[in-house]
Image (cartoon, rainbow, N blue to C red):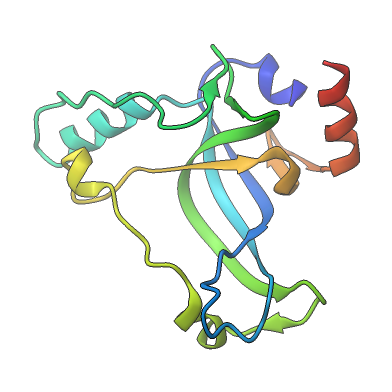
Length: 168
């Protein structure tokens, strides 16, 4: 968190995050399933500015004004959001580099196995007035296992995050 807070301006990063796949409960034979995703993202970016740049690329007026966040508080000048005692890294998703699904017992599942139980994805493209959606994701700091930026890769220890947050 400290390294991401020091430098200003948007910058690319690659994260590996383990999140709850949020499978539907009805008929789900797998129990708790996690999604392990590797994603190229931008941090320290501005949502409204990104949507307006996309609108310009697509030949529309850059007059998009974003709504206030529906949850959490963005920390001024930082890429972090706080909510109910947790910290999240706000990212613009550039490209998914792949993902897998894993049960809480470590069994890897094929996409075809979990697909019927995945929630429907909703696009914000219409709200943004663009054909190519600008995807905002908030990754809980506790879900990020690894982050790479500025030519270095950092393994994240969730216990160190918890102790740092408690000390703050």
